Image 1: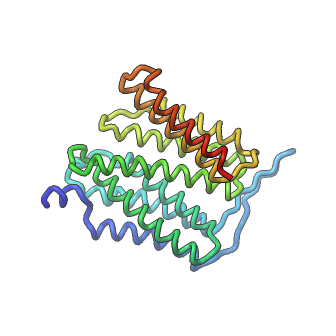
Image 2 (image 1 turned 90 degrees about the vertical axis):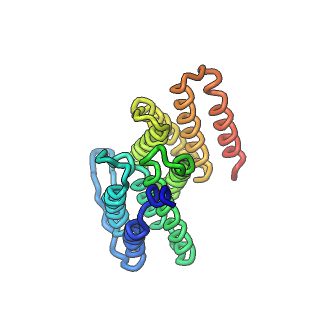
Image 3 (image 1 turned 45 degrees about the vertical axis):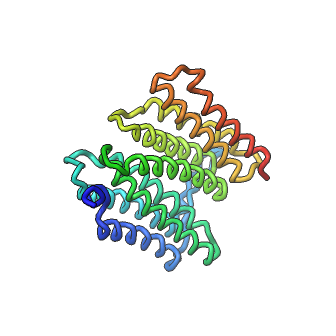
Length: 271
C-alpha cells in the first residue's frame, strides 16, 4: 500500500487535470464559432490554414496539459527537483491528436463515444507518465509498455486524421516529421538510461515524413496510410533499440523487418 501511494498520482490532482482538458474539448461542441482562413498568396502558390474555435481550444488544451503535467509531477517524491519536460511530450501530443480528431466527428452519438475514449486515453497517459518518473517502481514495466503502445496508437490515429482532414503536403510532412521524431525520442528514452537519441529520432522522423509525402497523392484509404506509417515508425524505433544494445545489424533488423512486411502487406490488401 505504501509503494502504491508513493508511485501513483493523487486522485484529486489527476481528476482536476483530466476534467480541465475534457472541459476544453466539450466547449468546442457547445460553443460553435465562425471559421476564418489565414492565407498566403504568392506567384503560382496559395496557402491557406482554416482557423476555427475547435483548433484554438485544442491548442489551449495542449498547453493546459503541459502545465498540468508539471503541476501533477511536482507531487512525486522521486522527482528530486529534476526537469519534467520529457514527461510532457506524450500527454501533450495525446491532447492534440484526440482533440483534433474529435473536431472532425459530426455525429453527436459518435462524438460522445470518442469523448469517452479520449478521457480514458488521457487518464492512462497521465498515470503512466507519473509512474515512469521512478525507474525502481514496481509498476514501471507496465507503465513503460503502456506508454509505448499508446505512442504508436497515437501516431496511427494522427496519420488517419491527416488523411481525413485533407491536409496539404506542406502541412502533412512537417507534422509527420515532428510527431514521429518526438514519439521515437520518448520511446527510446524509456529504456531506463538517461540518454536522448536525437540523431536516431531525427532520422526516424525524416523517413516517416518522406514516406508520408510519397503517399500523399496516392488514392489509398486513411487506414492504409496509418498502417504503413506506423509500421515504419515501429520498425525503425525497434531497430534503433536493437542496434544501441549492440545486437549485430542482421539480427537487429530481423524482427523489425518482419513487422514492417506484415503491416505493409496488410495495408495492401485492405480496402
